[in-house]
Image (cartoon, rainbow, N blue to C red; front, side, top):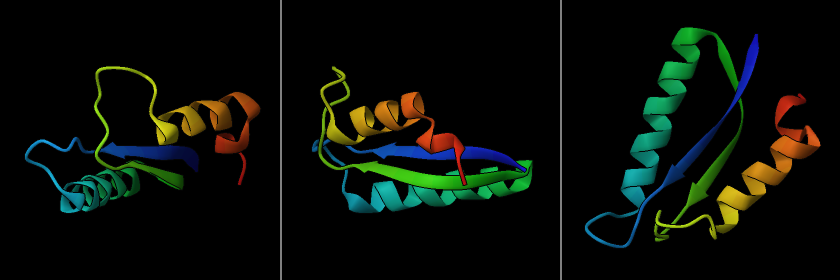
Length: 72
């Protein structure tokens, strides 16, 4: 089985936490249909997407670089 992670984000303009839950649900459904094992979900709440200075995004990148996101 292939491994994957999910990064879900909402900004503070016109969105809320339900947006993240919906994104994660859809991503999990897709992953399952394609044979992926979701290792970690990285939620990002009320953060702009205009730059990379987002804590969950940076953690995801760090985990990927260290191999954490590929281990079971």
